[in-house]
Length: 195
Image (cartoon, rainbow, N blue to C red; front, side, top):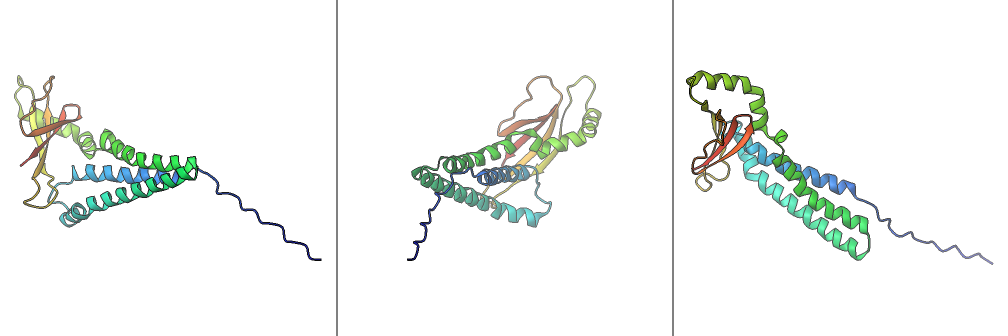
């Protein structure tokens, strides 16, 4: 008599965390933030071909990447919910949230702002230039640099100019109409102007 082969038992899939999804999401969100920061510092007239290619294809590519990843992870989270794989579901939801967190971190933290480092590196030179131009009794104020950082299609998008301003007054610096002002470091501010 032949012995019957033992029945092969299949182990159910293990419900594990998917940390690689969260890492990919953080990198994707950070890249979106870097893209925004870079075009806020990259003036027209420097490396025009690379700038135009990234301006034309970079934003749509990042948008499609974020949309596809978010949709895939949402579908995976729903499937994991129905299969009661709680860790996989949570990993996918955390990955979707991490995209926004990665973007917000790079967009909000001054250490990731190239203007911050531009001012830090050139601070003493800028202050000497400004103080050399003003009289002793007046509060120092000067536009240090003004750059054209326009993006989008010519004639369709508004021209975007940004100026690095030194304002030595102790109060809130003036905010002219049609301009947006953000603090960079010390008495240095950025003014955005659209035409």
